[in-house]
Image (tube, rainbow, N blue to C red):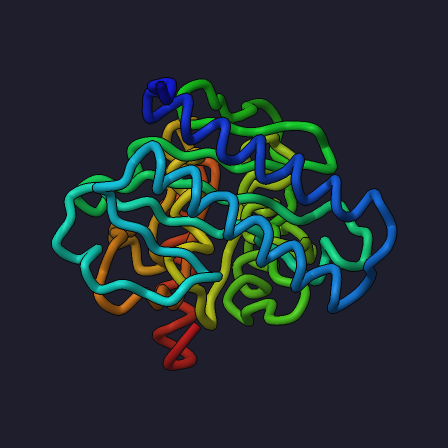
Length: 252
């Protein structure tokens, strides 16, 4: 008989198990670079899909590493997954990669987990708490596509805009207090942010589009142009600065 897991437990175990699998194939040391990244994506995706097929066969599914099945649009419960967020970071031995697992119900992440396997931690929406205290005066941005609006906001606030790897790593370092905000523009997809947003909202952080509108998931078009995750006491100021930047420049 298959054991029954609550949604919260299954979300956590998927993130933990995927991280263990990925660390295991990297530690063996027989693959490197692109071949290691591709193997990690494939193995993690396959394991997650098999677990959900056994334990939640009636739920929808959306993953970066699988063909989109439009049947998910008719379901109230959809798992939105990025088995390996930050494939390049993983394949080159860096620590700033993550595992994203989110259960989205009626467009809202209700259970979410982000694993940072190299740090040995899984952040879960059921127990996440954001660090408070003095500002770090740092904004996390993409290594490859740091948006101009983030540099503008950082300059106006007297903060620095510092690059970091995966979206999950950036969001969790805001939760940990290492950064005060994560600003991204220039495009992501739902699997890049569903789990980080689920964890960060549960922890008390502000999460929205850069124009302040709410983030929703399991849409037909899975593209999400921009995102803000930040300490709540900074949200209004950052959103106002982002609006000013867009008025002056026409885009973020």
